[in-house]
Length: 396
View 1 (cartoon, rainbow, N blue to C red):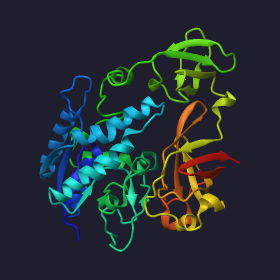
View 2: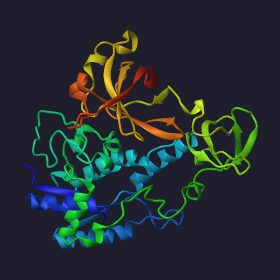
View 3: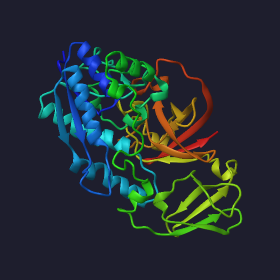
View 4: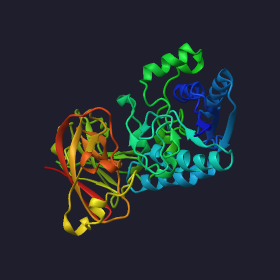
């Protein structure tokens, strides 16, 4: 059905093995390397020159063509400027989610299909869909569901949670059924030694070797403020800007023996309120908020048709704390907003660590689920109420 596949090749082991598997399966695969940051600007450093060399090495070893494309303007407008705005308003954004939604699975996707003539794209993400790793179950009359991969420790579906249905329907995830160790073993056995032991990329790509706080100062005005102990009301230190800190983060104060952790950031006064230790009750919050959610597969008609914003209609979903290993059963109710989510970025503090709560529909909303082939154990319960376009979460 699909012959020409554009493989988003990063210079890492995952995309290298994805390319290998596509070629083994008989597809006409070609590597496409993206450059999203202008390395000529000295404040930023990106390792993409080294990565491009590795991508070239892989394509030569596999004897497949390699293209290089540029989305510097798109990345600046759709990802970086949004990143700055959210930092300025006291939030801690996730650039990977933005990049996947607007660059890899939009600009890149459209370019590969419309300008390069490919049928579909493929990536080295640890994810799967209901159409299968190679779209072997593709059905033009059905919507596609985002599924978890075999390797749950490397699961990247959270970062794909905002990808649109149109792009997801024509994307392959060749390593969906492999563990990370198996991916590295395949690379070694095929002689892809330059990437077989290469470390996984972490952090924000364009910051590279730079310290984040130093880098971000080039773009956001530094407004100093005070660290205030919420119990004593005393000023215990100073900080160099709200954008450098996030709720739940540890912040050392030399005069204080036990570590402080951030409880709240005050945009009006530019002060940060802190608590002592990891077990302070202020760090255990039973409410969290999210913006407009995004349904990956389709809207839940059970909620929308019943005008659930006024009639307290309930539906079941699952919530997962990213720093935890177990999922929790949740219940939702809310308004008839046009956007909802199977996987939404929600941040809350737990034992002084910021955790992302991932939401996806459970079996009671089967048409909208982001599922796993393995049954997970439920620990704890949450109740969610959607008010307008805001999701409020409270434990019960």
